[in-house]
Every structure is written in structure tokens, then in C-alpha cells.
Image 1 (tube, rainbow, N blue to C red):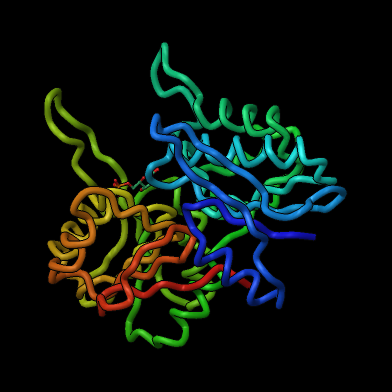
Image 2: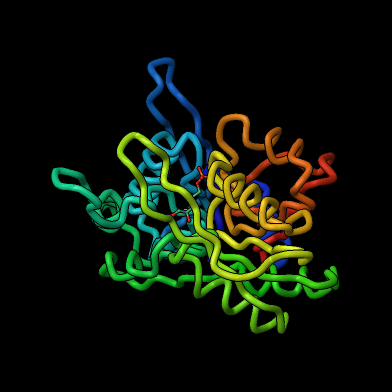
Length: 288
Ligand code: R5P
């Protein structure tokens, strides 16, 4: 077995290898002046089971092509099996048509990766469980929830309440609430008027409690910032945010850092960020 890393999350690939007590495989990945991607494995992979660690995070389209080129190079170098460890699977939020004439991009890229040569996918907290069924190859769908539960238990937060930002995350939040023996609240999108943003409705009583908001992704931060605001208006204390994947697009890190109603942001290393110096962020490692 050999493990290789794409360019999107080498620190996680190194942490996985360190946990397994093995060396990370050598692969050259570079760009031509035209932007085209060049890949060459620097060691023989003939008849080896190979694992490629690569997150489909920003820049997602670049990372997708890089992964395809890595798979193709591995296939042509006679790898025995090709396993993809995609800690963050981009395009997962496009898993169904919400309006006519839209694509189902998650299905498209499941097909593309399989067609190129992937034989197994290992991934973490897909936006929707249904995506597992988009693949005709085995998918190991891991969760970061146990890691988060362990971390939160150690924080021993007084008077917690677990909050799901929408119905889609209710199952995840319910599991956390049960483990912490804490109450549970949820936000639902209320009726909207044309040209007005949908108003959030809180189901549950958060007054005087410390919310632990659970989501799969923090991207721009708009969802969680809305939720934090609503909870504050309903008398909650500053919140803990937990998400498996911290995409942190645009000015998200500053917005979360500066928000007085956010106590801590807890994410995993499925997407690499340099946040060690920011006391508001805790990064849990999925390497094990
Ligand atoms: C939605 O389906 C997801 O679970 C997240 O709530 C959402 O993608 C977060 O995006 P943003 O941070 O941009 O609001």
C-alpha cells in the first residue's frame, strides 16, 4: 500500500502517514505556463494499492482536474487498486435539482471520478447521505461527529443546548444532543414574501443556555451568522459552532472572529487552513 497526496491538503496526508507509521509517497505535481497540470509518480506503483489524499476544496475545479490527472497517471502506471481519500467532497451541495434545468453536479463528478479509474472513495460528512448511492464503487462515508462529541464533552460546557441550523442537519444535531444529554433546538425557514430573505423561526427555548450549533459546512458563514443572531435575540449566551468542513470563503474567518456572540469555532482538518494563532478556532484532526 502507498499513500500519495494532492496539493490541496498535504498536512492531512502527512498526519495520516504519521499515524500509520509510513512514508508519504513521492509524486511531482506542477503546472505548465498555460495552467495545465503535470503529474508524475516519483516511485514505482506497479501492482500497489494506492491511496490519494486530496480535498475538493477551493479552488475546487483546479483540485478536481488535479485529482483526475493523478488517477489517470496511477492507472497508466499499473497501480493495482486506486482509492481516493477525499476528506471534503466539493459539489456535494448540488445533489438534487431544486429547480428545472439545473445539473446534479454531485452525481456528475461521482461518475467522472469512477470513469477515470477510482475504485473506492473514502470521504467525510457528505452534505447529503444520498450521494453515497451516486457511486457504483464502494464508499466509506466517515463522520467527524464522534471526534466533535469527544472534544465537546471535554469542554464540559454548562447548560448547553444543541442547535441544528436547518432540518437537513437535525439528525446530526440530535445525536450530539443525546450524547451530551442536552436539549435540542432547530431553526426552520419561515414564510417569505417576494424579494425578501426568508426569516428564520426558532423551534425550542434557548434563553440563558449556551448553544452548540452543528453543521456540515461553514462556507461564507452566512448560515451560522444568521443562526447566531437569531439565538442571541432569543436570549441565548454566546455560541459554539461545530462543523466538519471549514471552507471559510470570502471574509468568513474575520466575521466569525469578530462576532461577540460566537465563543468558539470547532472544525476538522478535512480542509487545510493556517489558524493555529487564532484563539477562536479549534481544528480537530481526522487523520486517525
Ligand atoms: C447547507 O446545506 C449546508 O449544510 C451549510 O449550512 C451551508 O452550505 C453553509 O454555507 P454558508 O456558510 O455559505 O452559509
